[in-house]
Image (cartoon, rainbow over all chains, first blue to last red; front, side, top):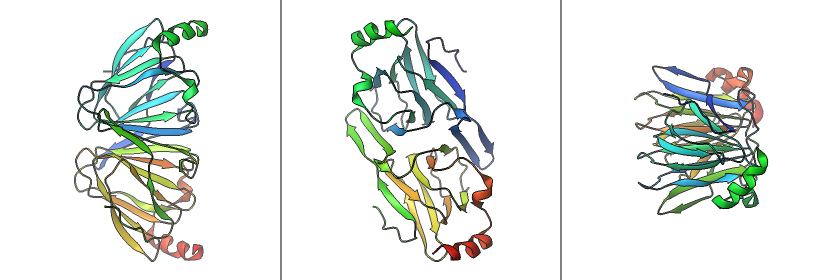
Length: 141
Length: 141
């Protein structure tokens, strides 16, 4: 069940793919499901029970998150609208734009989440303090 | 245990990362573990028991494969040297260059393999016939 996304700068991507009796494959490339050129990839795995990841926003980075195995929940917050949705389908990716506070939690065992980022890593563009996020985000909507 | 790779154009990538009690993350970006700009991403998942994937080579595409969860085996063949190795560690990626016949098999349940490709999809650069691969590869070494 795909929830409508209400926070700004967040949208689902129905990832093209193929499925048959042998298995499934899904694919993204620039202009075919992916709105930006991937510059950086990272993957979360072996997350301990009860733990969270993320808990920040980005001034410059756009992300696409894909649960390649397992499932978790993600909390989205654009500074005024908040929503929590499941990441549980390798054929449904979540595009998170800039200025969205996000936090992942409730990781099922053996969950692996791929993150595709539009930028090279730059700590300066991370918003890790929620009060600063709240103050800065107001200027962007 | 990381096997030395003997087929030409194949190498392991020790993927940078961080691990703590909360979980693990690994990351690749251009020049930091990744030798090419990613143009296309795809992921294999829900592979049925006993099935294989791949079974082709590329005239133009370089690939990096990462088992984000689970494990499988991959058979590499540069036209003269063959080797079979395990893909079983999200922190150890396999870079497969051009002109390498590769086939994935022995997928454990819940295995998900990420493939990072250096090109947009172009069926014409796939080598899907082993005899043609053998004939063409001779001109490249």
